[in-house]
Image 1 (tube, rainbow, N blue to C red):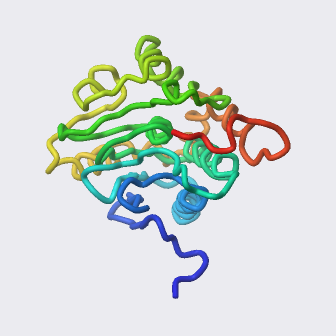
Image 2: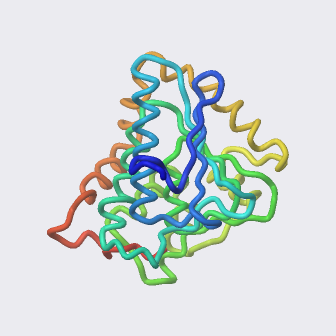
Image 3: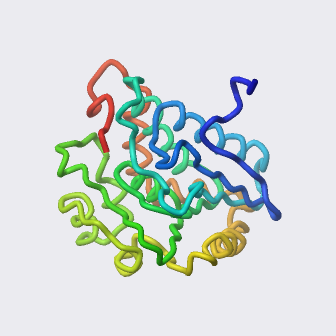
Length: 242
């Protein structure tokens, strides 16, 4: 029987050159529930402990299949604090992580999955049929800070398309609008992610990577920290249904 600390919804492997790969594997669609988010937080903490300070390293977060990367929050999760104790702290953890992070978008990325991808430093996908969309406005949903990562990381017109128009991007459109950094052939996608990790992992060695990222995206880090682990006031719906 697996121990209580053994992850159920992801695998973590250490490749050559201090490159870690987190593979999301919660059913096919990788919908986020509280336990899944907390496993991801523990995975990032494990990597940080293993690498220590002043070392090279990078993390690639990928899906387990070619159809889905992450399809948002699991609406059937009975945990009323999926966001407050899971999703919001997960975003905070990635924004605070002291090594380069790469979202390898192996499939469709919707809702909260979009924000999870934007929390990473780099986003890579393939030219295969897949979409990237944040449909919260069509569902009448919001939480404090939902639009802050699109606002900070994307051009104003692109952020508007994402937050207020719920645009659905193809890989080529996402590249043009700066949502993803690279679009490559499906057969090359893992190798390209490793290339990006190898190129930028050295930037963590001097110990300033996380500090400077926090400064760059400080408004986002602050916004998500303020709504993490909050149970005595409303910080948006108890479960963001996206």
